[in-house]
Amino acid sequence: MLMIGITVVCLIQSLVLGDSESDIAPMRPERSVLETCKALQLDAQAIRQEGYTALDKADNIREQAYRVKDEAFELKDEAFDIKESAWEARSVLETAMVETLALMKSQATATNLYIQEIRSTLSALADRVTGIEDVLEDHVGKGEQKLAKIQEKFEEQTLAINGKLAEQTSALNGKLAEQTSALNGKLAEQTTALNEKLAEQSSALNGKLAEQTSALNGKLAEQTSAIEEKFTEQTTTLKGHLSEQATTTNLISNQILETASKVKERQQTWLSEVRIISLFKVTTENNRLSGHDSDHVTDGQFTLDYPTHGTLRAYSQKASGMRDNKILLHLGGLFRIHKIKIWNLRHCCQERLIGTHIYADDELIGTVIKAASTYDFTVSDEDPTYASRVTLHQPLAQHTHVLELQVWGNGPFQEDDKFA
Image (cartoon, rainbow, N blue to C red; front, top):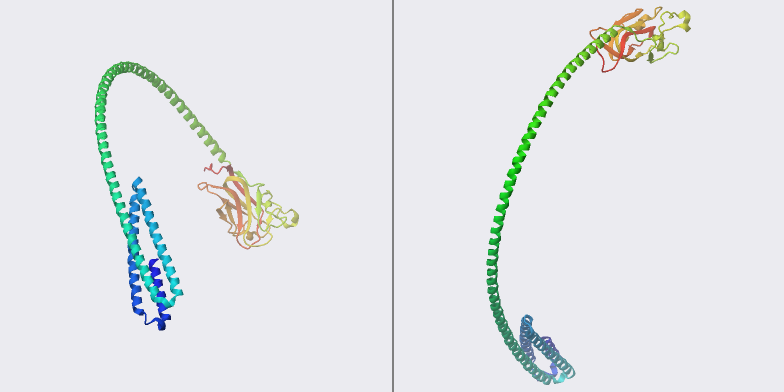
């Protein structure tokens, strides 16, 4: 603030000098006034720096004073007093500068007098600041003396406390050593007594254990002997039972073999009967002609095929001569096939059956290769054929005429019970 006030004063002086240069130039030169203002500014900066230094020292003293007990609070109060004095001085300086500025504005024609008064005022202010610095130095010196005394007292108390602590520690170590020695003695005595008791109890327990072990060994030997006798008896009994069971098993095996042999003989005898298995069985077809459907091929009628009695004709006929005409005969179970016989028309059209394939399920049995009244397809005994369906398939574009379809075989059989 002091620096700002001085700068303002110098500026006002420069303005006044600039406005009234023609009137008062002979009374004071402008350059000397500027130099004086610069000198005052330098002095004010030095004063301000010294004031900041004094405040820093006061703050350091205050920080150190916080670390002690009652004496630190007194230094704190003194620092606050110093700070208040500095603020009062600054306030006085600001008031003086304001008054000076007002006076300079109202009396511009008496600039020289005002400048002398300002110089005297600044001199007074410089003296006042010097006095403040002396006061601050006195207070700082007193604070340092008090702080040194506090540090001395603190060191003395610390030494006294360390001495007492060393004495108490030594005493406690002595007592601890005595108590440790006494406890070690008692522990040794108790340990000896416990070892003696333990030895006595161990001896007694070993004796009882030896007696019990001997008794248990005797009982174990008796039980082992009894178990061995029982085991021998049971082994003998089991061997007898096993021998009886082996004899019974052999008898049962022989009986099973005899039964199986008889069953096989009966099956072979039953298989020797080859019979017709297609009579009145269900049929299906494609390209059906009404009144001449495929059921005629399993009705057992062989004679009524002549066209004179058209309503009595008993043969199957297709509606047209297209390719792939089929008749399927469903046997109703799995049979062994021995022979398949086809009865053709006898009055005409026998050549239309040429090229027809005969299947037992998916196995080809034979093919019609010429015109004839009947066709026999025999299955070799060396290659047994089992089927549940017989199919006539004419792949050529022909009308298909069949008077009767006969199948000889035996059965039925299960899928997993087929044998030759």
